[in-house]
Length: 326
Image (cartoon, rainbow, N blue to C red; front, top):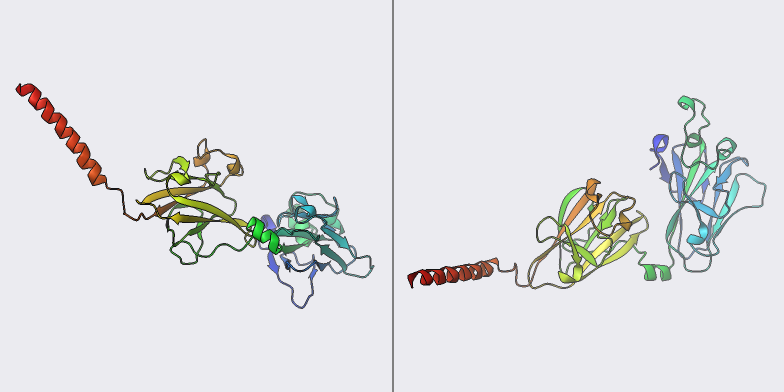
């Protein structure tokens, strides 16, 4: 949600094709969905011709978030994508987002409809409030935010796994476990993969998805190859609605003995560039997910190992006794 005065921003889904974003309604925005098979979508910006759509410079850009920050090229969504203002002089002004004919990436776009006094303040990285909030022309008090959810084409969904979160996992319940704080426990098996995600703004560790944290000591500090513990893989899919990655731990073959492995979700902008879980990451907000994988033969026999060690010790003591007798 938006910070400050815009925390209460609510996106409404217009009915009956009336896609008009009215700046006078400061606490609302409109939400549109561009279906995968649709070439484009149109909407109007305010009820007066003076209302402008931002970002306007550079052309054919969109904002990455609700705060209307980070202007990003529409080419990132699909080559040839544009947004154009209708040449008609009628009010309200209409804008059309037209997506190129290539593979379309799933993305959420944001635009801001602003009257002259707000638009003239461009570019501004964030909303601003006027003196004591009394002037009534602060940017956050007049603009209306347009949210456009662009659905990916089927080809892009198949190639990049930009689909809905995987169903199943966590005992086959069809739920996705969210790791946001503290320590969570879950299970996975060859018949029941585990689906989980980190809270928005958090990153998954280990960064290399072929690795995992070994949970044998209970501390989950040692990063090892996933293949060294189980025959499995970590798959990634994108939840385009929540704008988060959803992970699925798939066990191809159950191990002989019980195994415990861990993942961490950390609140860090630079987490994705960290080679391991060391060097200060533990000081940040984090969540630990402990995953148990049941073996076909149960737990490794610690009793046999203990008896073997005892046997060796007793043999050594017996040898020592014989030495003193003779």
